[in-house]
Length: 318
Image (cartoon, rainbow, N blue to C red; front, top):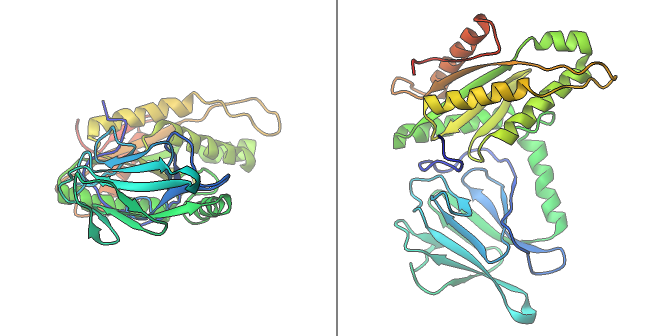
């Protein structure tokens, strides 16, 4: 069974989806203001991570509030404390928890297992290949980051990543996976007979089908998995820290999931279901780059479609 949280080997990623990762608790510092980290390096660049409650833990471990998939990050690396400070509002502090490679603030290493270091607005905290800038954000600034996310990195129809973002993610993680010798799998999927949906029900209903598939992907994948639309009715899912057998199980879950979802045409027509075909491949020594891995997943997808569609096929024997 796959872990439900991210893998343990990768570092930063090139593209910039701005997303929100909330930690339970209540922000302080004003009626609408709250402390947050903005990710300047690592994946996803531009992510806004709210600092709430008593703070957040950083590390490679699955139990950390902010799990950082990076071989240079310790399992329990650092902790960000949020402390109420009387009438002056709140203080943000950082503690290094005895990490191997250190926690850095503005380029200076934090003394491990020492007293917390006070952080100020604009300070940059670096952990492994990830860097975060501390900011006190108001509602206007938070809205700005959400708009940037939607305009630059997401497919506006489905809500998953756009082609450039997800292929950039695949390319970077292929390099990192080869470097650290960790598993990486890719799933290509294509909605079956999608042209017939458009021809029979109209393009508005076809758009509904694409939206629905995007919702299924976002609902059923882990936070470290990366799904994107690469054109028309074709999607790709990048699965870090995932062996081939596990990736096949993921693809099968998605296949059955989309087949169970009814689509109601906007004109009030009879609801119907759509199906999808999936091709799966795991990165191998013989893969020289992301393109080679993609091509093998594409061959598996072609096999799934040629064998009758609505099925999952893999490039390699399990």
